[in-house]
Structure formats: structure tokens, C-alpha cells
Image (cartoon, rainbow, N blue to C red; front, top):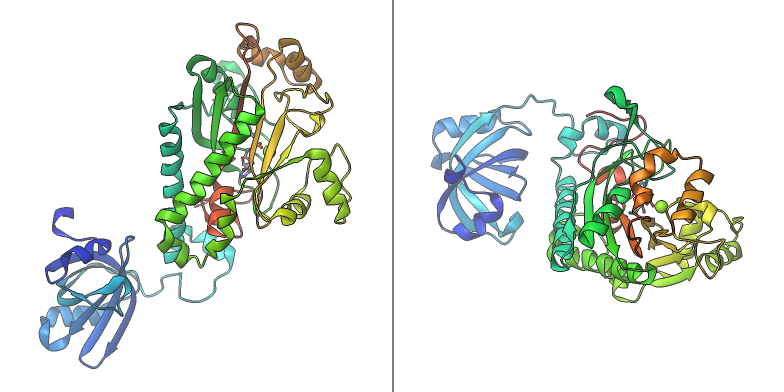
Length: 433
Ligand code: 4AD
Ligand code: MG
């Protein structure tokens, strides 16, 4: 079947030929003895023209019955036409209806509320804007693999059902036979550290879960994270890698997904800032900067979204905020030898008020110090035996980070809320579809 039909994006290779396109109807128009079918197949949009005197009666009658989202097979001649979407249209010879569609398709060319659209996500995904977002997502996922493959990192998959907890954010849990409670992974990092000791440089790319009761535009309960972990990298090496990585991702989308960015009406000049060196701002200076702009943050607090916005606004390009207070961050971060109240870490804040897209750090490599931090945090030390042992059997300087895929897509595409950049979002209050 595939062999005998042509995808809309490939029509440009078939000018003058007669082909069959299988697609879904988006718009219908007719003027007396001429009718137009506009259809989409996920690769593009086709305008097909039927002239009553040139098509079989059955095809002309089929047109009269057509509705939005009916699936059709259109056979005809491909003709160059500068006014048509994609530069080509089809002079139809036959129209065959494959699947009819009741005349009450929920998504109409008008404004719908966000809850309505999310309830109808399975259909909403068919719209041009959603297809454009998913294509950028796909490009970024491929770019992630290409970036690390070229640098000889090994991709490693880490478990989703876990016993040890990585982050402070909320946990999803489930009973696990006789082993007690299993948690859905908030991070692959702890396993990544073990894998880095085995393989040197690795990355994970998988779904992560946080039972966060935050209804913000940047929180999902299930999101995808890329987590590299590198043996013998200190925090400066770590930030250099992050900077090269983020720059690569943005440039890759600019290079290959201009069509999609156009559909999304993205002002791409705002992304040019990634070519400049990223700012590296000490946490203490970041706090002072935010205070100077009216924030009531005090030294010791984690930065809130409004503080992050104030800080990035100052520079209009990505900013690393480095060396946060220990108490504001996770137990595994390395104590800063120059100021033991702080840890060797950085959050990377994206421009345009997007906030944190990466959290990363050098890891505590001292057995006693990390044990003390675990105990201080009240975490169950027994669950971390294998993790602590990484510090006992050949401890090593190592660092890593986690880039949130959805926040990165939303920034690059200029989408307000990250629920729109994952096919079927999971959030507080939404488990379906
Ligand atoms: O800063 P986080 O919590 O860091 C970690 O999980 C580390 N274990 C990473 C590492 O060092 N290997 O999360 C990393 C990133 C954030 O910067 C953000 O982009 C994204 O993951 N993120 C979320 N994205 C969507 N919804 C949520 N609820 C998110 N929580 C974190
Ligand atoms: Mg973080």
C-alpha cells in the first residue's frame, strides 16, 4: 500500500506524474463545476482540484459527501503552482473515500479553551501547529544522540522502578512484591554515576517522574530528561559541555527546522544569543541582582521563577547560576572547597523568562561527606549502599547534568506552556488521554 502512494512532502519529486496521495481532509471549497480538497498527511498540505467534467461521476459525488477529517485517496497529476502550499497542487482524476468522518469533528478552525483541547489531544495533535512542535521535538531528540555519539559517550538506559531516591521533589510509589516500595525514577543520575565509573562518559535519555503539585507552565509529572555523567570532569568541564550542548541543539533546529519555526511564528532572532558565551554568575551575585530588582529573596533560598526571570533579563542570553547554598540543593553535590556553605553546581537559565532548563553539579566524591549529607537529609542510608560504595572502591572526580527536554523545546519553539510540547502530557489533574 505504501509503495503505491506518495507522501505530500515528496510531491515535488513527481511534477508532471500521476500519483496517489492518502490523506485526511482539512478544508473543502467548491465553485460551480470546480471543487477543492485541502488535505494533510503529517508531511505537508495538499490542495487538490476537481473539475466536474474531468472526473468520474462517482468521484464528483464523493466530494459532495466529504467532511472534515474524512480519510481519502486522491489520484491525479502533480502540477507546479506557486500559490499552492508546498508549491504543488494535484489535478484530480479520481477521489476515493477511505473512512468517512461524522460532521461533528470536535476541533474547528476557531478558538478552543485549553482544557477542551487537552481533552481532545488525540485530535488536537493533527493540527499543523502540533505537528510542527512534534517535528522540532523529534529533531532535538535526534540531535541529542548525534551530539553524544560524536563525542563517544555511551548511551545507557537506567531503571524506572527504583529503591533509592534522587531528588527532593514528590515521589510516585507502588508496592513491589516482597521488596517494599518502588519509586518511579525522578532521575537516572545515581545509576549514571555507577555507569560513568564503568564506562567513562555516558548519558541517559528517558522519562522521569515527579509527583509535584505544581500547576505551573514548566512542570509536568512525567517528563523526559537527558542526563550525561562524566568521569574526570570537574564542574568547569561540566559547564563547558553544557554550553556546547545547548548551542548545538539550538543551532541544529535553526538549521533544519525553519519551516516548523515559521508555522509556530517563532521570532528566531531571539535564539541568536546562544552564539555568545553563556554568562556564569555566582549565586551570591545572582541574589544581589534579584534583590536590586525588587525581589525579597535572601541568601540561602533556592531561586524562584520570578527571580530567575529577573536575572536572565539582565543579560538576554543563557545564564549559569553557580555554587548554590548546600541546603538549597540535593545531597549528592560536591561541597565547594572555597566556601563550604555552598556546593559546586549550576543551574542553566534560558532566556525569555524560561527559567531553569538544566540542573547539574560536580558530585561529592568523599565517602564521609556524602554519608553525612544523606543522614542529614533523612534519607534511608540502606537503600544507597551500592551508591556509597562508588566512593569507597576507587572514588573519582565526576560531574553530570540533567537537561529537561520539554522545557528546552518550549523555549526553542516559543511555546508558553510545556504541556503542548509532549504528545500526551501528564500533569496534576490530567491522566487522560
Ligand atoms: O534540577 P533537576 O531536578 O536535576 C536532576 O534531576 C539531576 N539529577 C540532574 C543531573 O544532575 N543528572 O532536574 C533537571 C532538569 C531541570 O533543569 C528541568 O529542565 C527538568 O529537569 N525538570 C522538569 N521538567 C518538567 N517538569 C518537571 N516537573 C521538571 N522537574 C525538572
Ligand atoms: Mg533543578
